[in-house]
Length: 281
Image 1 (cartoon, helix red, strand yellow):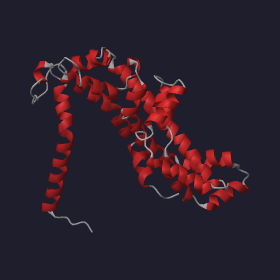
Image 2 (image 1 turned 45 degrees about the horizontal axis):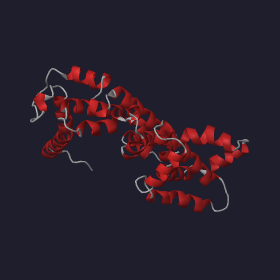
Image 3 (image 1 turned 45 degrees about the vertical axis):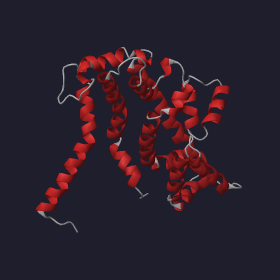
């Protein structure tokens, strides 16, 4: 039952506004800082916007900073986009195929294989980083997009989520497809994949953001400036030797780095919510 009391309505809106203000304040500071000269924001936070926003964004996009090898942020964002899309696509393809095999095929030690996959959740990249680096190095994938994406494209979490979804698909649907002469491949592409589209969309949003925010692995296997990702670039802009950080350009880069994940969430918002809550088939 929902109570319609003016005081409760006022209180809930006040709490909501305060929460939004707290969350949005760092973004406001970044916007304001990115609109001033470097000297204006060196020792203090400016209360209002300056007149250098376009110049600062143009500078980092086209010229970059010397502390990151003068690589334009435009190039860094292309690297981050390729890495994020590769990780997202790889995780979804591998996870949905492994879940399909576990649920719909009867082979020896089927559940053992599933739990082995599931146990890899206990081995994040940070734990297995040295042997993973050795394998990538031996394969000659250092400073390449293959090296950036391949070690991160297996996901036990996504496999588990797809498995749980497939288990909710009615057996009558599988039997009907079999009676109509549909083989495993046809059943997968014509029935199971369309039913999974909202789950795929929800996972795509989460995995894109996961790939976009990767820092440790790209930092380890890339040495060429042209392979710098935007998250790495931000860190290099903050920590500069024998120089003062240019916070206006760093904040401009941070805002540019936020833009693609926000755009993905906004564009995929409806499918993202449906994929997380939908249970009816």
